Image (cartoon, rainbow, N blue to C red):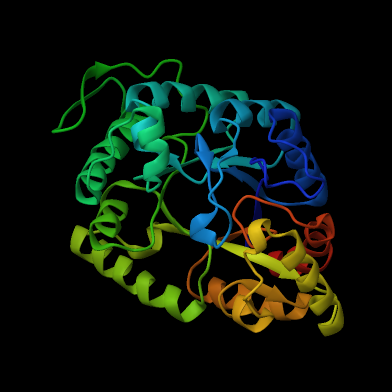
Length: 334
């Protein structure tokens, strides 16, 4: 089992209150590598509000993921770098394939490319990008994955779809990883998304709150989609993103929960109990967290990607990151 970190890269993300910047996020990536994490990940938003997470509706700034990952790739040597996930509507697939190949080369073959259909309508509207119904977005993503994967792995590539068309699109210089950098699709588990994963992707990621039982139900549906597509379900790689809160013991965990409640923007956790939060997150003592990770491993999950707050891509307390590195990663890796 591998353990990755969802890097802080929003104005709300940093424990010391820093504003979002490429430099601040790169520093965290370097620290994650030093601590022994296997991967670092960025999301893809022009900005983000926290209303869906119980926080304020104000807009928080973010860095752009691909240029930031280029900075991270240049500053690190071992840790894998990934997107969780890029929105198909923000970049033409031919341009993304070119960027991904360059980033994979810059990192020495360490890129994981996560793609998604997009959900945050406010940013589409603000940036002048059409926001079609979910069915149309999923259809576009299905074509998008094929074009990006084709150019990265089988150029010159030709494709004629309802949303995207390319004609003998070149792929030089190619990525380092062959046949291509792994392509992941982020999804909660809708039927059409699972079918797209089974037919066109290398892996499935889902975030941020999951119990093993709920995950197992969706994983079984993915297995069925693979069987229908004539694909071995075990060939689909699987990762889970989880919010994370760790304490050395029960008393320490309660203290850290109180601190997390105070840190959370807009009082997002004021009406939430520790028990409720722990039910579908990675929360507990190191031994309890190891046990939960092993439950996911038994379901075929190869990596957990952690956000050290009650919000995605945030670190509320650096000590949590260190406790996981010291007490949990060596155990689950063995």
